[in-house]
Image (cartoon, rainbow, N blue to C red; front, side, top):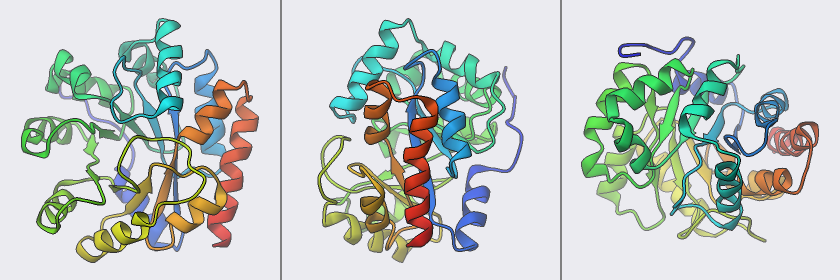
Amino acid sequence: MTGAAVKGLPLETRLRAARDMGRKLLVPYVTGGLRADWPAVLVAMADSGADAIEVGLPFSDPMMDGPTIQEASLRALERGTTPVSVLGELRDLDAPVPLVVMTYANLMLRAGTKRFASELAVAGVRGAIVPDLPLEESGEWEEAAGQVGVETVLLAAPVTPDHRLAEICRRSHGFVYGVNLMGVTGERQSLATSSSVLAKRLKAVTDKPVVMGFGISGPAQAVAAAEYADGVVVASALMRAALDGATPAQIGEHVAAIRAALDQG
């Protein structure tokens, strides 16, 4: 697998093109291996207006994830899901939009940075998010991933100081992931006020696509989060529906409703 490179346009190129045409970006999330039909969920999301899809690799200690994503990861692990099985299913899937894997440093380090990057590339993955990998220690991973065409997406939080925010924006590829609030992922009744403040700060220092996530539960919150940003990530609300037994088509309807709201502004 060493030296393999993914095909198609890079993640950032795709997202920039969509943004520059006036489109707000929509990145829904699915936990890999959550159910036997999870690839169908992914396809339904793509068909319903996603610009890219974030695929979570189940992990036993997901420190950044709230109760819903933790439950989804646990259910996937109980089914016998592994990173290898998720990437194997992605490899067999002709995804119509770029795929971005969300994982944790332990999984990446266990496999080895070069091997893990190559495995992502072979599976057709265009980007990777490793939220617990410190910026000061991510250089080796960024280089290994970049060599095979996998773009490293970095996160910025509301409390990130200006100098560090600028460095995150410089080194992030694909998009810059703005974290709406301090804490873990999860559904919220309202959007944190820190979201618009961070989006404005990010847009002031980078031309890369800025996508906001954490705590976006429905169309109205997505529109609010995207007002000063280029788009949104929606995760827990969709995985709650999946955990509750929604079909791929029904999950696609959730995504389509958010897509319609973003398009209407």
